[in-house]
Each structure stands twice: as structure tokens, then as C-alpha cells.
Length: 396
Image (tube, rainbow, N blue to C red; front, side):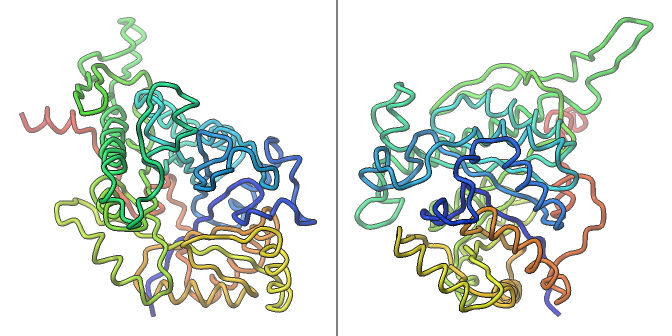
């Protein structure tokens, strides 16, 4: 019997299909409302899904390469800040990990780090982050501090052929390291709360982070005490060699988009990093549209595609719940550590994932049981990192 895996979901507005907002089940006027997102998160939480990623971008058109992404009127536009949204959802959920997307090019690394540490505190150890490298021309215009940067994939389609994209991944690596170091800057027992002496903090257990990198510098400690997981779960999406290398060097978990189960082995070979202390967790993405029958699913898909054709490198599954379970099983047998489902329509496909797919996958022996681990890292079988500064003192 193959190993059992956790399931994740990827939440994005009205769903991953660009025409999803036009469906009768959609709620296009509620995409920036608190109740809408609370309901989505609770649906995933109640179903036993281990974590949810929340998409984000820094311009109106998102990360689309379409020339008219900023001005076209047939796409859902407007979103909530993913880190703030995840912090709002934390007290409204019990077990669900919350993994917002952040772009590393423009926000200050210190602000990203403290926001993610705050998320981990308010969720009691269920916080993570999906790191996105690079930026679009409109994102650069929104911030007004940079004029040069990536303009999309080069003609070859390879990240390594564009110096601007290579620089963006180097910067993302520096930002990720800053997030980890700032999380470590407070030792676990730095707060002593000694009422008799009036001493709140052991200042010797709060360490200044010294970073002088290619893209920024930091001197100082985080303003947020060390959070329940020690460090937030670091995740990334990778499609080719340079992003694979980034994930292997910097992430705890990577999302991949194999064309099918047979393609998994080759991707896993590219994700090896012998110097890692813990194996990289690998989740395969599936974009799913689920109906009670295949015929119903196909009819909905055809309608969506006629309105606005979807282009994606993720494998698309259009069918009944058994079709989705079969795809998950094939990926499990191919050796992935988990599967992230991208609902084509929200809330419709998330509801069907929770009500139909998850129970059938559990009955088929595919899903890892919930053993009650309190943090997201523990649910994924990852240890809690010790503060690197505490380790240095012990070894001195």
C-alpha cells in the first residue's frame, strides 16, 4: 500500500478558472468580504484539509502576462491582502494551516517577517508562506522604487536565460533567509516575566540579525517574540530548474505541476539537495472541477472555456469525485508527499472537494489521518527548528 498523504487547497478569489465569477454558484460581489473567506476556510477546516494557500499579487492585473491584464473588464478584479486575511481567518479556524502568498521584490523583508510571525502567533502555530520571486512592470510602477525587472519569461521559456529573473530568485533567497533569521532572533525563553525583580525580558536571549546582502541589509532583532512553530512554514511553487533549485535550497515544501503521474520522478530528481537536514516536502498540484457526474462536469467546463479559455501548466481534472481520487492516488503512487487541489470554481468546487472527494479519498486509504498534532509543521512531519543563535551559544 502506498504511503498516506495530506491534502491542501489553493484559494483564489472566485476560483482558478478566469470565468468562474460568472457561474450561478459564484459570489462575485462578496470576494472581498469577511464572511465569504470565513466560509471557505471553515469548509476546508471541517473537511480535515491540512492547509490552504491564499493567492495574492501587487497589481490589479495580478501576475498575468496578458498585455491588457490591467484594463480588461471580463476578469474578477480586487483582492484582500493575503497575510492580513490569513491572520483574520486564524481565530475562525481550528486545525487548518494558513499559507498566504507574498511577493519578495517590493515589500520590506522585515515587515514580511513580522507579519508572518504574527500570523503564527494568532493561529497558534498554523502559519506559513508561499514565496513568489520577481514582479511585473505594473507592480514596479505601483511601488515606484524600481524601473528594471523581469518582463515575463524569455523566448526560450527558461528562467536561466533572463538575468532579471535570476536576480529575482537570488533576492527571494535573501528574503527567505531574513524571514528565518528574524524568526530565530528571539530565543524561546527570552521572555522571563519575573514580577519580583521587574524584569520582563532576558535581553541576552534576543539577538541582532546582521544581514548585508546583494539587495538589502538588516541590523536588529524582530519586534515579535518567537512564535509557536519557531519559523513559519516556507513554501514555493516551482515549474523548472531555477525555481526547483530555489525550493531545494530555501523552502520546507514545494508545489510542482507535473503533466501526469509519470512526470513526477523526473521532477523529484531535480529537487534533490544533499545538504538539507530535512527532506523537502513535495506537493503536486491538480486544478479540479468536480460534479456528481462526468457529463455534468464536462458541460460546465465547456461553458467556462467558451467564455474565457484557461491556460495553465497544472494538470486539469474535470470529472466526478472518483476521477479526482484516481488522480490523487496516481500521484501518491508516483511518490509525492501531498497534493494541493486548485478549485476551478469557488465555492462550488471546494464544497464538492470537502463533501465528496475527501471522504472517498479517506475511504480509499489515501489520506493521512489527523493525529491531533498542534502545529502545521508537525502535521506535515516537520520538526520545529531551534533558534540558530541558541545553538551557537550551546556549542560555544
